Length: 573
Image (cartoon, rainbow, N blue to C red; front, side, top):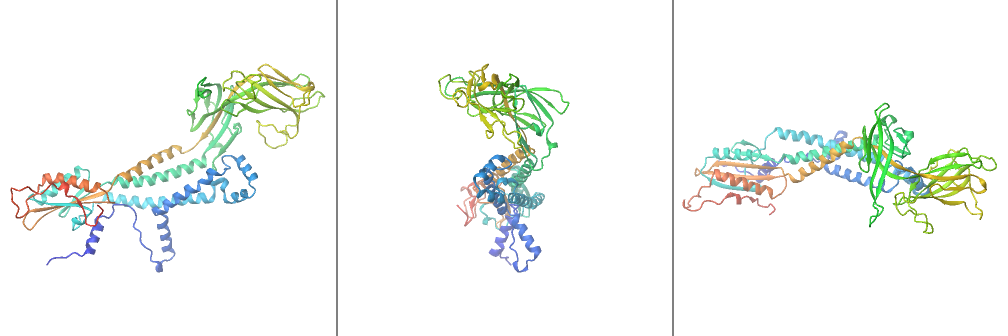
């Protein structure tokens, strides 16, 4: 009695052959009428841990980060946030309620971040265990009809079936297939690196999320302007500005200090790039810990000093005019003080303020404060050559222009103010003989006499300063490792194809062995037929074709099966 195979059974057989080519969990439609609390919880968990939801959350996270780039953030520049609130009285309160001034620490951004983290973990754990189970198992046996697979070939040979299977098993193992004999066929599988890459990519995403979160919570970053000859100790009070993560504490600061010895900057002297910086170098003497030995180093742009995980970057440079101020009686109230000014252009045209807060008495013997609005150029164009704009960043022809004021600087009001700006609210102008604001442009060594014998200010010389950024980003190395692993994993999942090959050898009714070979990949690809044709050609050499019944033995035999790996009926061509 002949056993017939129904189309449904054959389709089920093909489905079993192609099963477990991926570790993606099978989705079952929930039985809605029977769902209870546990059923709905399971359904929600399956949706959350599905790949499409993970991709959706990743897209939402990218979109949620956009406001953090377009809207001022309190953790980056609180001054800009305050200015935005002042200029936008309607939008400001709305942004406050939505948390748009602190996007990366807002509730909604954290919710997306945590959901993505949970989704990735819930997706990766079952797939990992399933993949481990596949590695411990064996490739599934051959379907009943190999000719229904997307790529197949067949021929007749006089070689015994056992010898054909032995040759096929040796050939497939040589080609790094996991192969074994299952009944009358050899089953083999290859391309596990695809799933390894897929799992590696997801693990790398988790690692990057953890590293990013850790770095944001414990990071710190601050800036410090240091004059030549001055130093810096890594404590909060020493920073000009400082920002940190939410879980940062002062104990997280690395203990070190340094002193700026000499700063050197060179510039292109001529040509189209005249004035462009060629080198910036700062000689530092530093020590680690309270009693560490002093060490010397040179810090350059993009070559920071690394101390205990903290990096000291050289980020800016400028000039500090050295001035001496005397009061009406000739008493020195500011003795050769270097006052840093801030650069305004590439040629280091600089502005700032010189403040005398204590010790000054006017001609009437009354206590007052002095303020000078300062403009400095390292290379002056010359008298009668226009405004105070520097012609070159190096110190070739320095000039210091001053506007003089007296009164109350406002530093005792308790309201913080910039050391580089002059609050003129309670200041009065010194008037010259024409009743105009007293101002003067000075060379090095020249003195500006204040009107009415109220004192003087002398331009003694110029000192250089360097701006340093001290930053620590914990887990940055892990984030980099995660990024590299994600690229490698994604490459493997894109360029490696997982596929299976079966070789069946059975004796036909006429006593001649019939060989059937078929291949199956996870997706339609020309690589599976090509590889199957190559394998069939090698096996054909060990089990050459036999003539068909009724064919002249002297006639040519069946053509090389390397050209017989054809797509199945209904498959793409």
